[in-house]
Structures are given as C-alpha cells and as structure tokens.
Image (cartoon, rainbow, N blue to C red; front, top):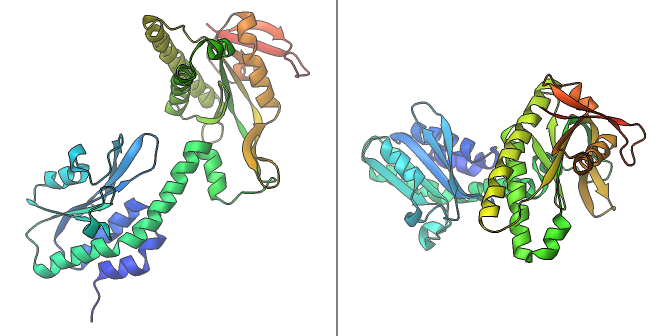
Length: 363
C-alpha cells in the first residue's frame, strides 16, 4: 500500500530539521505533492519566553516562503479568546476553505496549549484528503515535540545566559578550558546610590526599579546590535563585538545605545518623580579591548564570565563618573576608534590598573 509522502516525511525526516519553520515548509510541499490543494499553511506553538507566549509560522504554497508572527503575553496558541493569527492569515488568502487541527493527543483531549496546524485549500477537500490532513496532525506530534524541545532549551539558555553563552552551552562546551577571546567595544553601566535605595525602599519596589533600569540599558544595547553579557548586582556589562563590523562601526553602535539608554532613563526618572519616587542616577563607561569569555568555576559548577584587563578597565572607568561629575566616560582606546568629537578630561589613575588612562566624555 502506497504511503503518502507527507506521512513518510513525518516518520523518517522531520525530526532532523532545524526548526518549526523548515518543518512547515517541508510538510506543506509534501502535501502538495500528495495532491492536497493547498494555498497556505500555519503552525502555532506555545513558546517558553519572558515576552513571547507563542510562535506562529505562516507558509504560502505559491512561493514556498515562511514568515513568523510572534504572540506576546500569556495566551496559549489554541485559546480562541486571544485571537488566532494563523487562522486570520489563512482566511486572508481568500480561498474560502480553512481547516485547523490540534496536533497529536490534544486532538482528542483539546489541550489549550496544544500546537495547531492550519491549512487554506483552494477547494473543498475530498474525504481521503481530509483524512490525510487529520493523520498528518496526529503523526506530527512526535517530531514537533522534539523540535519544540530544542527551541525551548535554546530559549531558556538565552534567557538566563545570553545569546553568546547559550551558544557555547548548546555546542557542548562544558569544561573549564572552554573559552574564547573577544575583541569588542565594552560598555559598563551602574546605578548610583543603589545601597541607599535598597535600605529605604520595600524589596518589591527595589526589584521594580532594577527591572526598569535593566530594561532601558539592555533594550538600548540590543537595539543597536550589542549583547548583554552579565548583570552584576545593579551593574550591566555589555559588548559590541568587532569582526563583522569594524571598530568604528562598533563604537558608533555603542554610542547610539548610550544615547538611547540615557533617553529612556530620562523618561523613567520623570515618571518616578511624578509618582513621588527618587530618580535613578547612573554612570556609563565605554572602552575598546580584548576580553576572555568562557567557563570559570569549580569542576562541576561553572559560570560564563568575562575576564581580562579590558573588563577591569571599563568597570574602573565607570567608577570615575561620580568623582568627575559626568554620566558617560570614554577611554583613550575608545576615543582612538571613533570619529565623534569628544571632550578630553586628562589622564587618570584607575584602581588596580597599572598605567593611567586617558579619559574623555561626550560633548
């Protein structure tokens, strides 16, 4: 008995694909090869992420292209009360025929967090075609579970470790000697008076202030292609790697991130003052140098940590912000790589750094 190509694919090949987008495109193509008159398809899955609740992949048969739509909030993919991006998109194809199936055992139990496979067809389905789509939804459960597990692991590691560290863990670098040297623009930012704030305010208010601060800094860093490596108490260490872009471009990106973070903090401080809360003063420093990023710790308990002279220098440089009276300071190494006019502040000794550091600030 001839087995449809779609079912053979689900049994033998689907588990090896890179992700749900490739899965949907390959499955749709095989259904078309089986004679199912598809115009498009949609796959919606729950996604464990602090912001994104679900991911929906949309496939158009005519072009074979797949695009992704993200669902924010906490709504599970099969919850009709929170909209259904996949169904809306399939309906928008204008064929007038849309079919949706819950994947796997959820097709019987109706679990609200089940994956959903949807299809738009160019005509009404025959009974064998409808049965095939039902079988596809049932057989898709196993490979989708594996793909979802991989995506979950990646998302969780990126959430807690950051993108660069997560990639190292996923690559199996689980020993202390695993590390890499990164040349980058380093950004270090730190709140002022955080100890006093912690003593004066309720813990929940302190956490809310920290979250708001980290949102502004990390949001600006990520917006301009940087990466947050570590949250250190109320401090943030971020990098703008030099490699795919040159040092001048990385410096420009870091400066744009600083400007965005300062604008965000200015808006936050005005909000806090209007609520009777104190503003959140801070300092930021930028430097260019090499750092070692990798596993450090005990034999069986590791942390991904950045070490090196550049890390020490940028953190010590930020410590001068208060005494010099400037919110942003830049090292001589940074000044040498940027074309932006800067204000020289002379050379200053930095605690633990042998040579004095030329210090600059923004105009």
